[in-house]
Amino acid sequence: MSRHVAEVRWTRGEQDFLDQRYGRAHEWRFDGGAVVRGAASPHRVPARYTDPAAVDPEEAFVASVSSCHMLWFLSLAARAGYRVDAYVDQAEGEMGSDAAGRMAITCIRLRPVVTFSGARQPDASTHDGLHHAAHESCFIANSVKCEIRCEPVIA
Image (cartoon, rainbow, N blue to C red):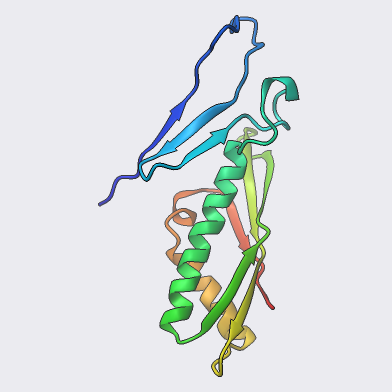
């Protein structure tokens, strides 16, 4: 078993807070030293209380699913003897109401465009199979309840 730790830091500063007029910007700090500016989604709170340039939790969630899927795909493709030159995913998460009527990310669409090179090229069926195996192996996908759809494209 492994542990994965992130430190999330926010401070009130001079804001009153109780009037709900406080900044939502904060920091995510990771054990490797990376620091990422986080904030509430500008779709959820007024822009003056967030930082639209920061990463919001919903975006981070979508990126996490996409990243995990990609890492598994690359590993499986390499093991199968397919040389991947590039992998670009314009992943998208949909916010909506879940079955209980609560706001949730209800669907994540992965749209990876994969470029292969070399003599050995996967056909469409093999390519889809690699994505299916990546999805089944992805720790993040196995940890969430929302639907995750993979709509891959071979470049």
